[in-house]
Image (cartoon, rainbow, N blue to C red):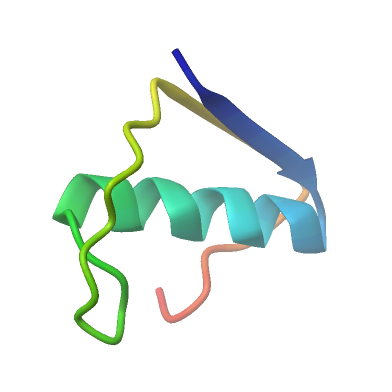
Length: 49
């Protein structure tokens, strides 16, 4: 099991990774092969939301 999390800019990275995991690919179309079980973002934002 893998969880990701972060604060501020790290939260943006964690939430982007979680959204890539949900879609199964990165924003550029490359496959996202990691399975994330949990994501936590504190005082952050989701890029391109």
